[in-house]
Image 1 (cartoon, rainbow, N blue to C red):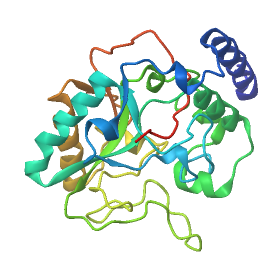
Image 2 (cartoon, rainbow, N blue to C red):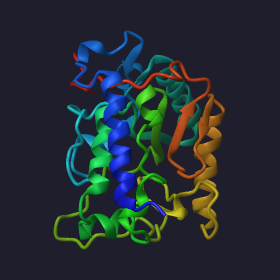
Image 3 (cartoon, rainbow, N blue to C red):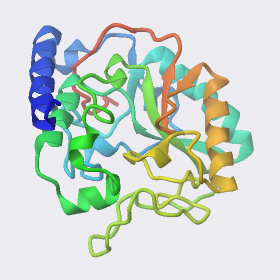
Image 4 (cartoon, rainbow, N blue to C red):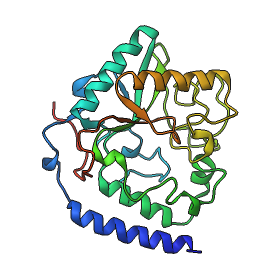
Length: 260
């Protein structure tokens, strides 16, 4: 049996080799011309870009995210605009957690998986798993997000009051699997888990959901499928435009502040 530490070392080697080929250290000027800021395509879509701050499983800003902006290949951004137009008459809006993900961010996730547990992170994001079990089942050495047509998102009622996604510092962490009474902690519709929950309950068709949670997930999946997105069945929030504009390319340019 291969030890988890050996798997991580091998994974890190593969990542390093892959990133040499990708040209890690790519600058913002390396962004392809047909990648766009979602805010320029549809400013009504909410953005809560978790990896550009500390409200994520690593507890810190992730390398490559220099601004809290959703960047996508333009066809994916335009498709999201169409989804938003479909949802608006229903009193709903999309809220984005992650879009294009630089390859260096994926490498940082692999590094994080090798570090000792932090109790707060374990309690919140993977309460039922050992950290060693996250790689490679939940944290892969390459991510479809780096191809520019994958997005993580949820649904929010348009009339919902503004809420901070981050819990108060003095509050005890809640596991991502905690029951959601009508609304998720960040104001979104109740989906049964929070974003980036490393747990089988995050599977789109997981058993044991309430009727509201099951219906809310179905509403999201149906809205996204209607505009060409396919859901990743292990994560209710994860969708990829089909076909992808860049199915075989993993980019590493950083996400930088949008120019007005």
